[in-house]
Image (cartoon, rainbow over all chains, first blue to last red; front, side, top):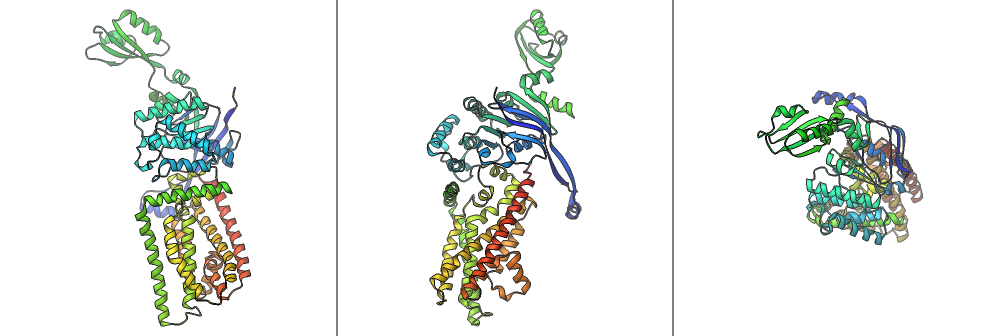
Length: 329
Length: 263
């Protein structure tokens, strides 16, 4: 059993903000007297993450995912609680700690807009004190894995969003970090690029044992990449475990997608569960059935109806997560 | 130290590449600065066509004062001001997060990430001839005297840097500090290009002790004129450099603790 790389105990972060009434009058008022209030962005989080894990932080906007990530990477002082990352207190920002992780933010770039990505990699090489030979080797390996050998000398501004994201990932991995924090890494990317990036991250994680911690609103990222999911709502962890267990806990129903070789009447299907969809010709339909009963019902349908094809599907992760959050409101 | 030197060399190389890709814009900016300096010089020359001395100051002294002020202005802009000016925006837009993750001194990174290569042009084109003229017109100045004035200039540059670093650190407390920086750095710098002794005592005291930019123009020229003691000036400058270093360090420490990033 490996040692936990990240240990957080009762970690909280409060922000102080002020309210400004709308309009010119409100602006003038707030110039002289401001009404402050406190926001608890992270509220008593406790968790530990082991080496090589791929963990997905999910939650609605403002849930506290990015704030948690920023505390883990030493950008924000926790208001209370204890935090240790790789044995360091992140906020002390010790050089060795800062060298041991990378933070990639999908909406921000660390590479210079007007210069080719290679310039940025060389700058990172100097900042992270990577030797010449290891640097050349890393550039060769990573650019080939990401399929970007041809664009290393092209100015960033001339690259597509997907190419830029790949370059950002490469810049983040030049110094071989032990932990990779990814904040919305696939935001704005097309489906093909998203898939390539996810495949790269998975392969890289398996080969290098880097711990990957990801926040995303894209459930495909979470489903394909993360073995473990941490669901955060209003600063609190409301679920921490595997995707399978999350589905067991919150997805009380399963879907039976059926194709028939002759017409089946609606009433014959509605006996088994809730009819989600039904084709006009009566040759295909989808039923939502109780999770616990789904195997029995499927067997019964197969025995009684003219089924050509039957597929048992989980509920859509987006729906499940939405249901989890609705339950919290 | 060697590590920082290597990183700075890389900043310099990247800045040169950047300069080459935006030559026209940069050249126009440099040209505007050259024209401004020439305009100042013409104004002084015009004044001295009507009078011989201005409250004890000769034409060459004022040229020297203008030259020294411009050295600090351009050098500061080349080395750090171009970066410190951007700090408030970086904080507001969240780019500062990226900087905080780097295993390098944050003040060094914030101050030196880009080198304003274009400003080297007005530095060379206007400042060196101006200062050379100002110094040549004073035959009483010898090489030793000039060498002795170098620590004065270096300490003055240090004071200027720490004042600039302190005002930039206020971005952690106030959303937009650019107008304050313009007032403290540019406004005061304009004043110290004029002989300080023509101002009322209150302004003299403010530019000596509150925003001590008189130490980067007026007092060094006074020393060269023989009107002030070099040792006293060095001592005061050293004390002010330490005081402003401590102020900037405090503001950065508290500011980083308060830093909340962007949502």
